[in-house]
Length: 384
Image (tube, rainbow, N blue to C red; front, side):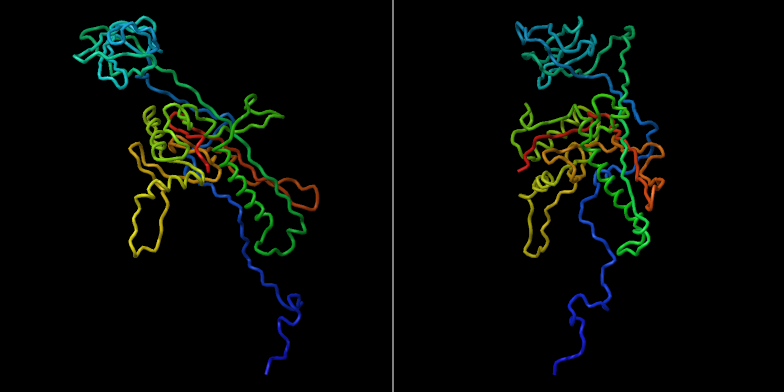
């Protein structure tokens, strides 16, 4: 015999005596992770001014280029012009890149070098405009006077702080009522806005720029920090550039080309390769042809988290905020995201003008990217 008593479904879902059954957890789908900031970690110091500066220096260069297309006999001419004659001294052994011939500098007239060709029994080879010259070292004469002093000048590099802020307003009634999933609406709003601001800060650290005029800010100009990409000028490699490997897709040849160029021009230790989702899949595919599986394997692995090359061991960082056509190479020891002293993210209560509570979540930060030539960037890669 069927049950004829009262049931929960007798009045559908609107039965007034039924208690609500609502999960006490709130799910968030919006992306807010900050993998690059996590990889860089917290800085060891703070910025002391809205205009943050740091000093950089470099050693005297040991390479230059030929700037002469007037050779009468490229295999025997003993005088030729270079880009920077002040980089050379009498007694320098020099060698053109890719050549076996050694030359000895015997005279310097502004940017014109006089040399001994085929020095040390080597065979003279043709010289040409724009060839790179490597300075091996200087051979001093015994008992000679000291050479003229040479030095480099330290340079100041800078960036400005940027204020990140979000307002919170909650009515008195909203604070008084019981809420599902939370105990305090103000605290919940603080968490939400803070997640958004930190997310935006990572995006700015990568892609941000500063105004071309009045970068210090004014009553009408907003002060903003220059991001990593905007800092770089030396090691920027674009698909289609002369010398850059052909093809639009990211592969190991392009990755190692960039790493080798950065290694060749600096003592930087690239340890982070920062990419978006599309280029991360290309990196994962580097080893796809060499993977092997046995019949008992039940897990398919298709992920590269660390790339180890001759020029460094690099952790792969995948962030949503990286341009999809780009790969960024960072020496993390030279990159810091600094708060202005006393201005790391915090909540500042504000005076209420009515039946509500309000305040701001505020933080002021800048990017310190030392020695931009220690980092690099590939652009214009295929994204389809």
